[in-house]
Length: 501
Image 1: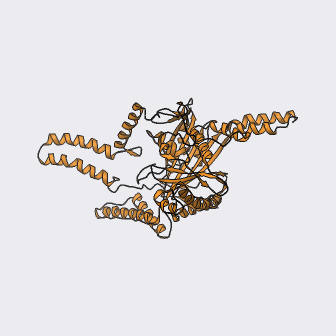
Image 2: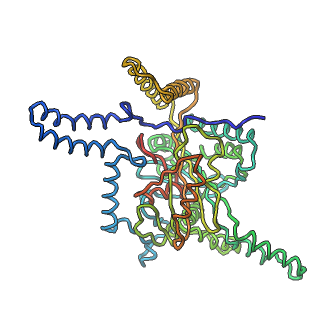
Image 3: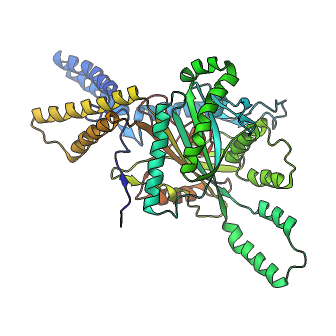
């Protein structure tokens, strides 16, 4: 029997510190803070030196000491900005329709980070109609989202999981060889099933003269199974930067249509690789489809209404883009985000030192209480060959410098140093053989009605991750992390190296 393959080296920091874990900027700040202290000591002003040492030490601690993934100075800065947003009302949000203002049906009305995202409609895509594009004006990216039908990997054998992992690697490698897109995001959401669709279907197909015992058995099954039923929604979002799209888009006519046609060529070639990963169907979202994906992200209860309208054929053209966002979102607390009568707690998942296996993130989607929702998002960015070679050479150079310096000073290298050096060499050999380097981030969340104690459900999510991953709760940024973990818009990786999400 074969054992599951373990994937190691996934927790490598993009911007690791060179000197005692400190970045060059942090070292420079510490040196500048030490200069006044040394100057006072050299001049014999020891009282002044003691005062400067206390002040400089406090500032150095704020810059150097990490607190839950962020230096203390960044925590202080984020706390100040968070409180300013609450006092000034910047972090409160209400939709234009709820405020009685005029709205454009084709203009999304979204809060927070999503205000920088536009959702224009592209031209006809094969025989599926016009697709909804995702234009992130903040990062200058264009993308599209598809809804997948997938049976999951929970019942697959280790050999089947290994094949899917290899196919996922091949898909990411193919993205690295393309010049248009370089990011892919996979999002899985559990959906509380209140039975609305089933009730509509049963009302349309029920046999009126069915035996009484059959009706009784069906009603009992509805009570025992229907209350804990959940559905799963799977989305994939691919996107590419504006600077790579500009030239081929100009050749295709320019504007939104030119960028859309350029993206369509890539989307057409992604359906077969996605089906090779186990997807039974790939449906690229149009405007109403994207609006529903966003709306049900903010309000899980809205899915029952939308699904019932689809079942009865009363949905018309579908949900307008103006109704994609929440009705209201009060100022978020430091540790949770409230939206449309629901509260969400979001985390980033840090990979373990010992490595992980394919499918190990599944327990984060295990709903423990009827009515709660869990989500899991994995965001990938494939570096091009030039960036990949530069990154692996930098890692190898840094590990070699630190190893040589310790040997020259008579220090023994630790097991972690040896593992870092071995991993850097293995990564360099892989890139030289034609493989790519992939940046990635993992986010998870749990959503419950606002009247529930969200901390209990957050603790259950942390328990499910215990022993597998470390969940880092992104305090003071729960509204932004909600977009990363719940909404299929492709936002989730930092623009610069060294960020968590």
